[in-house]
Image (cartoon, rainbow, N blue to C red):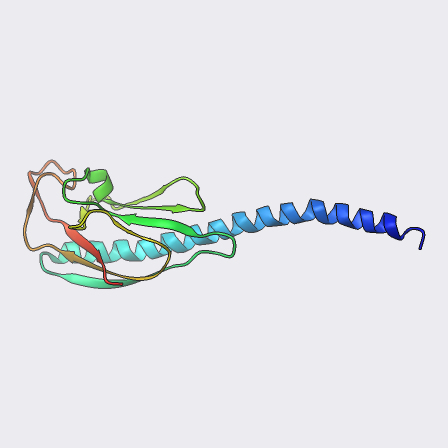
Amino acid sequence: MEGFPLNLLIMFIVVAMVVPISWNYLEVYSTRQTQQTIDTQLSYLESAVREVYSMGPGNSRVVELELSGGVASSMEYMRIGGSPNDVWSNLSSFRYRINGGLEQYFMITDPNIAMVNMTGVLEFREGNRMVEVRTLDELVEGDLDGDGAAYSWVVEVRLVY
């Protein structure tokens, strides 16, 4: 009975040291898992964009994205493409942020494929989303894909739900 307060104090000190380290490890692991999930889903979406672009005008495809966060992390936002008057580096990219960290870029290159949304940048939060990608029937004036040509085919990206 005499050593109980000392044992209790030692236990509290050990717990106070272990909990922050464990929480930090959980956050790092969860953020990496969220990043990997997002990159996998964006690879799937990139494949769909490349497919409809290569098939030519009027072709479309609906892609379901499962953008879920981890136990201790979440995706703050996802931005895809831009409006037709945006710079081509934004038009050819997916941009997202996890847990207040730096904005991450996932680019479609070789060739640069311009992705537009007629209302501006397509932005949404984490969760399950249905996104339609389709090659527009008309050529858009301007070098949207950065290839030096005056006109470009573009892929419209819009949120179905």
